[in-house]
Structures are given as C-alpha cells and as structure tokens.
Length: 229
Length: 229
Image (cartoon, rainbow over all chains, first blue to last red):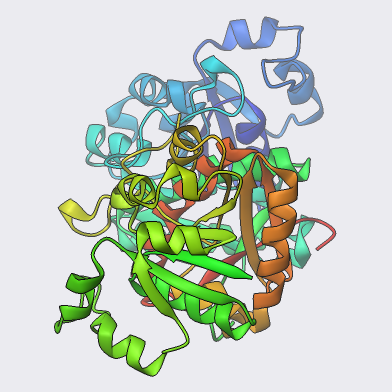
C-alpha cells in the first residue's frame, strides 16, 4: 500500500522503515524538504541528520506534508504533538478526507523540560482535536504509548507479549490498522473504543515518561492482564 | 501493627480486611460514626450499608477520622479523592505527623458521570497536595491503580504477575510500604521516584477507567515489561 508518513523524527523514520519492511511504499512528509536535507546536525531528540539517514534508507522517498499525504492511501501522523495540527493543515484536508489516519502523536509540552505535561487532557485529547478538525479523515489513535523502535518491533520486549491500544470512531479503519499492527508483530491489541478514549491512551504517557525515568530505559511497555490472562 | 484506615467505602473495607488478615489491627475512620452506622441503603458505589458489613467483620473497629488516625502507627487514606484533603484535616495534623501515610486516593471528579476527568493532573497531583498540606507525614502513593479487591489479593489476576506502583519522598517509608505490599502478594513493585511521580500513577487511571469500560471488568491491571522481563 502507498503510505504517507508525516514527520521526520525518530517515530516517522521508524514507522516508515517498518512499513517498507512489510512491503508498503512509504513517503515521509516534512514542512520544508530543502531545509530538512540541508541539516547537518542531529535534531533536538538526537536523531542523526535526515539526509544521511535517507542515504542508507533510499527506499523511503521524501516530500512535503501535502505530497506525502497525497501519495498515501493511508496517512500516519508521526509529528511532534505540538506541531501536529499545523502539519495536518499543511498536508491538506483534501489529501486526508476518506483516508485512514493513524495518529501516533502525543500532546506533550517539552517547553519546560522533563517530564513534560500534556497540553490537552482529561476532557479532550489530541486525537479528538485532529478528528474534529478533519471530520472526514478516519482517525485511529495507536502506538503513541511505546518508543519508536518498539512500535514496529514489539518482540524487542518480553517476546512481544504486551499490549498496544487503539481508539477511533471507524470500525473498518480500526480493523485495517489492526492488520498493520499484527504485521509488525503485535498480538495483544486492545480496542479502547471511540476516539474520546484517546484521552486514556494519551494520559497514560504521563506514567510512561516516569517509568522511563525510573527504569532508566524507554524500551518498556505494559501488558494488560485480566483474570483469564 | 495498629493501622488507621480513613474511608468506609470499598477501598477502605478491602484494605482493612487485607491488613487484619495479615495480623494488623485496623480501625476504620469516618466523618460521623453515628450517621455511618444508621445507614440502611447501599452507598453511591453500591457497597452494602457499613453496619451490616461490620457485623460480619467485627475484628475491624470504627471511629472518627481523628480516632482512626490517632489509633494508627501507620495511616491509610482510602477516601474518595474529592474528599481526601478534608478527611485528612479532620484526622488532624497531630495524628499524622511522623507517620507513614499510604495514599490510595484518586483525583477523580465523578460529578459529570463516567468516565470521570481528573481534577488535578499534569503539573500537580493529589498525592503532592496531601504531602504539601501535611509536610511531616511520610506520604507514599500506591495501590490507586487497581480495583479494591485486587489491592490486597493480586493473585486474582494472572497469578499475581503484574505491577504495583509506588511514589514518595521518604525511602524508609517506601520500604515499609513495600513490605506491606509483599505481604498482600505483590511481587512486582515499581518505585517511580519522589511524590511528584504520583502524577504518572494518577493520570494512568484515565486509561484504567477506559480499559474497564472496554474490557467490561475492573478486575484488570498492567504488568510493566522490559527487555529482560
């Protein structure tokens, strides 16, 4: 499938690689391609400059947010949460309408350092904000609860025996996203419900960052257990 | 050990029973003992009237918040989050100072129905509010992430192979609470760090209520997994 991945950071790169490894054709979208390719320093999160990364991963093409979204039969929002709505506006409603939009972003405000608070929570979520602004996109919130490498390779932890969450209003969209998740190796997928349940998945991230600090690694996840588990 | 348990709902009852089963001597505290004993209807959460419950569990004594806190060498806040600070004020600073105070409460605002938002989050937590108002109490936030019966019987789920969290500023207090948790059967205890990390444990509850709604049961928990798990 042709997939547009918005965001050139660790999440976008990891998702694009994971998707191409599964035979999909991925285009990564960015605000300004020229500026992206001209960078010679690591980004704020310590990722190597995109140009060098893309040289060793030439199977992934690069374009503007709009070009990547137009390319995709399915679109992934892998941008920083603070810039997600702006990136999606740049991608263009016309390039999102009717498509499954996987939203991996988190509403984390890093302006005050670690650990970041959420800039929306409790009575709203970034997933809902995106769904409201793009009512014709079929938003599925997922994968925002794990580190980027775990997203596409859950077997890195506990032999893959842990949980990924999913929220969204469109059952068919969630079924399609479930297939992609299973192709990455996810076996335990919990459908939380409609897009308002993204509040739960996003607020969990406040615990996740503290587990990271306490355990000393972001390579962690949770397995949801019930009596019959 | 003598333990004062503030709160007469499902959490207070479950904790008091769990503690007495471990040989502790528990006194449950309430605002008004006479009013509590006069009730003949189930409470807002569907718990049977306290009097009848206490008749079949006479090993647990009942007193005012102040009497229960004074009785305890250790105190447990098992009150509804919206009333926790008021209950602790009624218990009295003089009955809390220097003592380990296990805080199980959640800052859930049920006034708008389910699922409840948190009335404090992100940049503060109920655990911190309690620690700030009672600086001489040795607050340990724990057990707020599971249903009341699981708190004292983790083996009800997945043979007890799942995680309980702990936050607090006082290492010795956390060590003591860890012993109590292990006596209940908890084997995987994650110390998140100081009391500010209670933000993570409390915000997780926004996910927990949605897992409950999605899975159809509150008898659930998460197991934190890492590569070496």
